[in-house]
Image 1 (cartoon, rainbow, N blue to C red):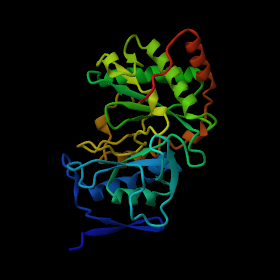
Image 2: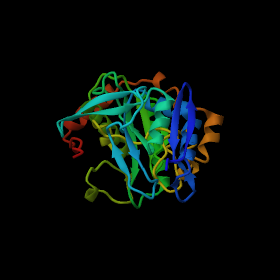
Image 3: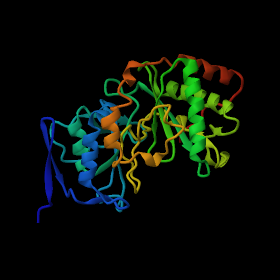
Image 4: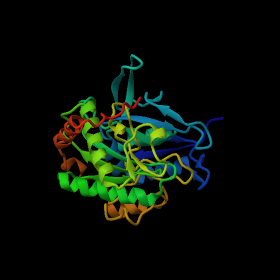
Length: 317
């Protein structure tokens, strides 16, 4: 017996969505079609976040009740208009063709293929070895509360202002917060990671013990917030702005304004609440490409720290 399906028109594409009534989020009863409708509602935002970037897919073929699949390679059966980018992975000595979103139809097709979360690289197809996005990941420890995330975000904002850099914050969709800064694609991953570590160390100094940059979990106080500078390492990805997360209430990694951070909580942003918010506010990250900032001052901080005997950033492996 053939699976039930609906056909979704996306611009000049038609995407066949099978099993539209399959429940993906048991806590809310949200279905596969609800997920499709959500991504349609924030279409320009999710495309802006993913455009021209290699993208790893977090797929849930049976919904959250089933297995989660982390997929680098494009799923089989893609229509000819789906675009990809070939990447080389030295650790395995292999290449993979990853999804490279250039239009909303690609997002909806990936959702049809059970993708819940979209995790793009911080570089683009034109030169995948030169990041154009510096990512600040505020990752609370198991005993670190949301108020610590909010206070740390204030320190990050203050420091970015001092540097003359424009940060674009978003909730992680989990328990943390991300801040993105557009940078010219002129440095390799190693330099961007060094810069990210130098910035994290300065936030740590200003945090009165709230923040740590210790890479090994055994070296962290569980009540501290970790700034995960290693998210700027090659092939490390985090959920895109507007990506749904694979959690029971279908939270979203939601762009927010700096002024909203002191009053918001992660559960404010779900596939139920975000469509109306997007309709009212539009894409809060729409102008990110208009604010590139050169990381050279942070590389100078990294050199200063090394000269004073401070340890280099820990290897992510």
